[in-house]
Length: 376
Image (tube, rainbow, N blue to C red; front, side, top):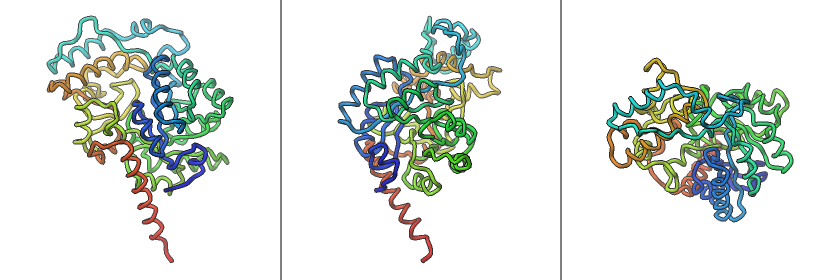
């Protein structure tokens, strides 16, 4: 077992932070001695209140956090647009492209297709934060830019640390200047939205950039980390712990669609790609006919920006997941999900608590190897 200042600060046994959209994973990791973080952006305020109430009961006072995506840049920012206003900015050519892609895979488009919500616009960020603050959350995290002032101020007022994800040292400097309490340095190996610099490089770059400013903000390493030995390597470089996401997608508790789980278990580290074809910003996900269709050279279409691309695509992808699990071959070819390059090491479905245990055992073994390698 490891004991660090971060463990003492957050009241955890092991500095393993687990991001998940699934409340069951969050609770299981927290109960196993790590720190679960619920991805809250896709929920309505009422739904989030219900999810957090469930977690409160499941963890019995143990610590957990929430992650709210409030992008620094998005379509219609400052214009106070409704969901229908945003939907009106999705060109018909893009709607036709999706319909043609479905037909090419033997899926008939739904008439009067419903578009998804605009959660990635960040318009509900303040409401979701207000809900989260009615629960005993111990961390507020934000991605896709510097957290809005209201988030940082709320954290300071209540003594709740605010974390921010970065993909480059320049971003880390901006986050530190804004007053965040925890920085997640995320490499390109990560699932979901990520930059282009590898974890092995971005972590020490961020650490050195902060040190040069005399800033001692703790840094978590993220990106492709699915084992304790990888985590130990990051801590050896100066990280305070690890922020993980992909590894929980193949746990028993995860919300991942069944066919997508099967794809992940069979995938190699080369079966992921950074594609903007799901959200409008580059995010690492499983390679599929869907990601291939949105490659820059295809159809002459560049993906739309936030949140228009996700509004167009998310309802369709959810339908694809259902059809794929029913054995529809065309849907199976299209099915994709956010996952990092560490998927090549994710080869078995297991309980989340077992993943935590394996992380700890693997970490301790790696630390012992490192110690024994020293002369004398």
